[in-house]
Image (cartoon, rainbow, N blue to C red):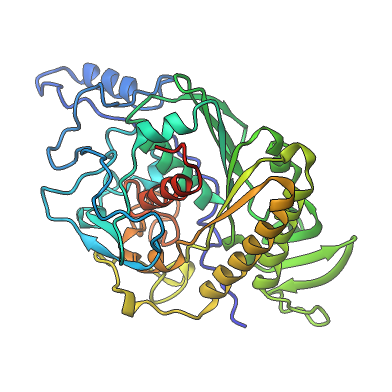
Length: 429
C-alpha cells in the first residue's frame, strides 16, 4: 500500500494570529504613523477583536451581504440533504454570512483572499439537495437554540477549521469573547455572553493517547498510538459539553505504530519487517469505537448530543504536498466527475458504521448520535482549498489542499449542522 504523506506538515497547529478589518475610511493624506496606529488597532495584534455584527456598518462591497434567512418554500424535513449538487448563484445575487474583512478571527492561513487569491467564484456556489433546498444558516435562531449550552469541536485542524467558520457566522449576530487559549493554542474557548453559549475546540489528532516517535534525537513524524487509552485532554471536558462534533482522519495516514496493553500489535505504513501493517482504516475504526464507547459508558456524559462529520479528503493533484502537488481549480466538480470507492470512501464508510453502532448503544444511556456526511459533497469542491494562498512564508512553493478557505465551501457544513439539529429537536425554530 502506497504511503500517503499529503497531510504531513499541513496539519501543524496554526501559529498565525487572526487578522481583522482594515479601516476603509482612512483618507490617503493621513500620515504614515496614523495608518500604522489604525492597523494595530483593527488587527488582532491588539487584545481587542472588533466584529462587524448586524447592528454595525455593512461590509465594504455590496455583493457581499447577509440576506433574509427565511425558510424556502420547497423545504422538506425528510429529504436527503447529502444527495445533491453545487449550484452557482448569479453574480450580484449571492450573499455571504461574513467576509474576510468582517470576521477578525479568520486565521491568516485560511484567509485566501487576503493572501492573494484573485477569483471569488468559489464563494458563490451553494449546495442544493435534489429534493429540497438546504436552508440558509440563521445565526439568531441558532444562538437562541443553544442558549446556555456548550458546543465542542473535537478532532484535528479540520475540526478547528469548521469551528472557525461557525465562529465567523455567529459573530454577525453577537460578538464573542475569547475566554481561554492554552499555550499551544490547541484548546480554545469562546463565549457569546448575551446567549451564555460556549464554543470550544479540543485538538486531538488521533482521539487516542499518542506520542511522537523519536529516533536519534529527532522527531520522525510518526506516532505511537495506544489503542486502549484515549487522550484525557479532551475526554475530561465531556461532562460539561452538550453538543460534541467529532472528526478525525488525516493524521492516521502517517507511519504510525499501534499498541495495546503496552504491546506492539501492528503499524500503519511503517514498512518494517516483522510488523504487520494493519492500515489506516483499522486505526480509524478503533479510534471512533473507543471514543463512542467511552461516551456511552460515561455516567456524567448522559444526554450528550454527538455528531460525526465524515472524512474530508485532501485534493492534491500531480503529486503529494511535498512532491509539487497543487489544487488550483476554480470551479467544482459535477457529481459524475467525483471518484467514489477509493481510500477516502473507505474511511467515510468506517465512520458511518461506527456512528450507527454507537447510536444503538446510546439509546440505552440517553445519548444521541447523528451523522454529518460531507464526504461526497466536499470531493466535488477542489476549488475551495487555500492552495498556494495560505500565506506560509516558511513553506513557499507548497500548497494546502486539505483545509478550506474562509469564507468558502466549509460554511455549508454549518448549514448541515443547523438542519440536522432542527430535524432532531422540535424547539429549534
